[in-house]
Image (cartoon, rainbow, N blue to C red; front, top):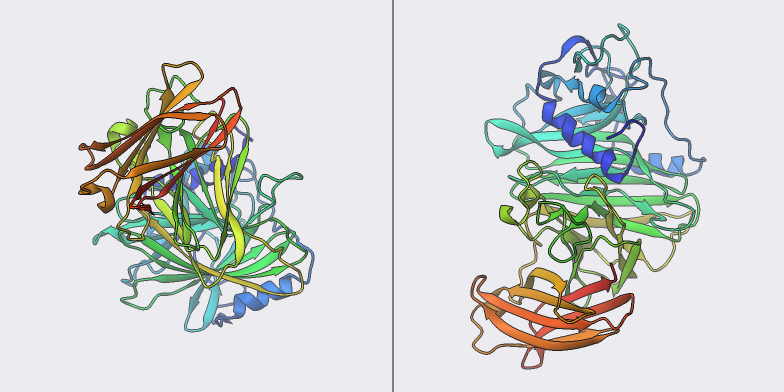
Length: 518
């Protein structure tokens, strides 16, 4: 990444790259150590409502972004220099205590110029972690530094025996604004989540809330989860967050949030997800790439309040697009990577087939609103260009608290069992007829695997005309293939919808697609 450049993906990309070298031994002068902070060795009292009270109190004051003066050369590190600051594994929090959890910290530097406070909580006492001489090793790209300096943290990561009982892999990261991400067993980092989204893709620019402080509860021996509290802050709101993280084949995060708006928030995004889609079988605007597909996620999956399942393949449009899926009390939504076959990506380094699907499972009633999908034009895969979240119908009003809860699943597939048919693949190409597009949609699942009779494909288009609709068996996937042609009629945008019906009953996901003229 060029010096001085910054984008959504860059904020998180570097966390993963730093993690890859974190275990290496540092060279030369070292900084940082976990010690008692201002609270002293005894610590400060910490209760379940401590962060909530802090958030409520903070909301009564104007927003002030946390800052700290960092001495040279750490105030102007290049990307490579930042990577050369390496956490000393032996200094991991709880390293010698034989727990299934260890915590490592990220330093400030490069793009990460906002300090965060990190506290360890044990037996009702919070002890601040502080950098003062032993935490990080410096590699040869950083020639010198002061003997002592007030360095700060920019985030944290959680390690544990998620893949092997004898090795502690990293599986969750909190770094950059309110961004965080995780993986399940055998997965590689891909898409990310955020604490909150405000005014995304709206005139006047997006507001990025930040987590300014974290409190990490020390797990009990034998515990299967870890609790992390976070204090959110931004010009529009504060918030108290509680994350309960349970690693495994699917890593699950239970999220509880209480917001205290400083002002009315009209366009709020709850449980925001951020991902990347450059090109794939369903949409190929980028030409010349030897790889058949490049994406962290390939579709938006929804289970609406009426129990209908929707699948919307992602696109990389020429112009920014927003789509709204109206609903009441949604049962779930997420950005999914369904394709797990290396042959369809051919990238030995990125391993896109191992990227997680992230599913949002709301808790309680979320009322009326809509899932909003934002697709941003991108020419390179370093840019996260896909955003999805729940937008409440009513604005959040100030001078009162607003509580939300949900569960995040970082997994291989949507964690909702269903006997119906799901979309396995969407392929789009040009037909032989001028101005006509050919669509090929494969379905698999119990409803079509052993069906005696072929279902009926019910298709609609907002413009243009449809022709040559064919439903046939696809023995390669023990499922069905639907093909049809769309004559675009010279228009710029067409909304398509397809479902499979048997005995006049919908037996498949509802496939949705927005065609735009490339």
